[in-house]
Image (cartoon, rainbow, N blue to C red; front, side, top):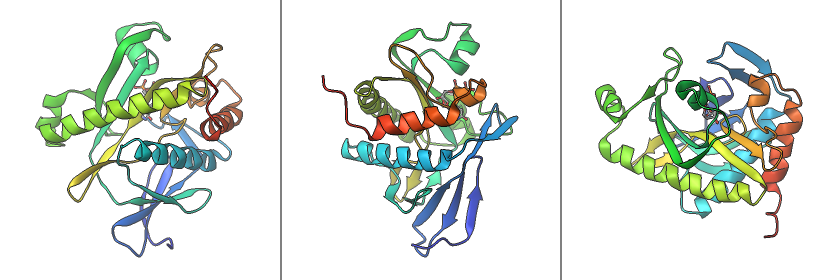
Length: 239
Ligand code: UDP
């Protein structure tokens, strides 16, 4: 598979065409942004780490019955994926209060939720990815009720699978963001799953091993991303 024309450049990734119109190359950059791109920086080798982590987690999710856009890893920074018509929604699932939810509801970070909290956000940089509900989505014409039901069900499944996966590696999956897209008559999980898109806290110490180290200037960012890669590819702890 060779890299064709650049189709799209986002904050952390670039999409390239291939000779197959159904397949695209997802290239992971080291660029980091936060607070709707008001804060910018570089995290050395983030692209390599996030590609590797995403490859591993997509393969794991496929094995657990969640269809994704992943086809295969091409290089350190590149994965081959199915071309999706991205649905302009971001799903957030939260298991522990942090970030936007703490701020919005005036809650302390770290409260363990009795049941996962599911959120839809409208994918729009211009609007700052606002929190929306199903009726807003229908008003926007972004997806059908049937599609929303399917995405919601798949997202909870991803949460169950990943929560268990990370718990076996002594990591709490605090929250994460997913994106889905249409591919022929199916809906597939797309984008990436990495410390850029999830909050990971080390069990016991609550050490943050994700992009909050960049957002909040906590230091040791590269080491945290590398640590997450080691946990992801490492064997589960014996239980
Ligand atoms: N997230 C993301 N992209 C976004 C917004 C959020 O990947 O544009 C992830 C974020 O890393 C966290 C989860 O979604 O794991 C929930 O983020 P939150 O809504 O708390 O927003 P934030 O605190 O990042 O502003």
